[in-house]
Length: 451
Ligand SMILES: Cc1cc2nc3c(=O)[nH]c(=O)nc-3n(C[C@H](O)[C@H](O)[C@H](O)COP(=O)(O)OP(=O)(O)OC[C@H]3O[C@@H](n4cnc5c(N)ncnc54)[C@H](O)[C@@H]3O)c2cc1C
Image (cartoon, rainbow, N blue to C red):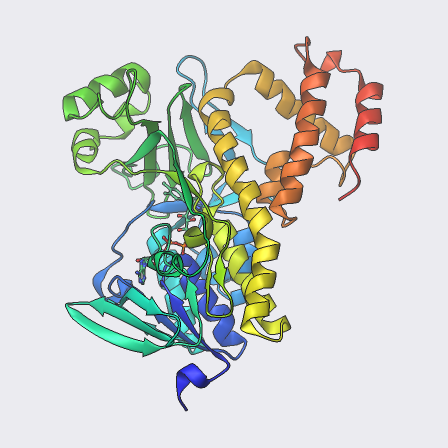
């Protein structure tokens, strides 16, 4: 049968995290799926990298992996992160738990290993994968897409293209003349650079493994996520330009060494390769991408970073992209036509993507500037106390985003209500002893419905 004429045939552009997961979900539901990936097969040539080396996986992402039947394989290599291990410039470092106990944690996973596990499962489910095939052009009228790689161009007839080709999406650019996407990219004036903490000589982790480490320094910070081979990937986030410190002023190994001696003295001995890593590894750019539309009737739809790239400070870009995949697969099952499914998908997911994009921007300020602040810590204590007093009604912001699957837009709305309650209840006091519990309980009961 001519594949493009098969009503159950879909073509996925991009075999990264979202593209590979979507291919599994669709193939399991009886769709005939082809995936075209610009890069080589990571199972043959090694993972080519790209964005961060490891990522934080939370409940939304895990739920999607469970749907696809790959959660167990992925979790076998994941490292638990119980909370933020904060390293102030002065004072004792310590763990701030994310949740109540070990049932409320996030997980560090390797991007390369995760991608490979998803590609294996996609192929096992029946999806056909084509590597070294990057989308070059799409002719939506004739239903023909042109892919290139290794100097060869090939044509592929499609019924619909699904864009999982990341923040720099070619499919998005091809859709732009046909639909008013109104694309806006807000570049963050901060970038990032990755460094490594190797294992000890005995092969152990050098610092507490079950945590996401943060060295908050006001306008900039380092974080470190553990890897299952007992290393940590450190990411330095800092402004590109402006006052010291910034990437423009810290370019050489000597400058990096002096900067770490001044600002991250406890991290410096953990990163023996600092000088080489700093000079070799590029400075990554970070941005939030906004679109008015994600689809071209029933012929194309975007998801994941191609539709709504976000800054990484809530560790939710992949988790959100995975949620997109489940939502799209469900709509494709439910709706009568591709156009209806794509429209329903966009209507459901766009407000949620915009909510997590906003929360991700806000979380940068929290991570780099507030986690070692006494007022902030008092509000976190109150948050936990109110969760105990009003279970299911007062749920901390981090828990709504990372341990639950309520829509991001609802999490944002409730977080804003809760933030005002926390600020007002802690104003002018230094410990929870000063809290007027009757007054706070009354406000919580009046303003927050049970979830
Ligand atoms: C520093 C950093 C840290 C992050 N940390 C986290 C975290 O802790 N937790 C989290 O949830 N998220 C995190 N993210 C976000 C996460 O990386 C992205 O949201 C996620 O990768 C999106 O998946 P995707 O499949 O949409 O896009 P991508 O992962 O970018 O995949 C796109 C794929 O499409 C391919 N491609 C590109 N162009 C074409 C083309 N023309 N034709 C065919 N194929 C093409 C690419 O090669 C790639 O394989 C982080 C991001 C950064 C930058």
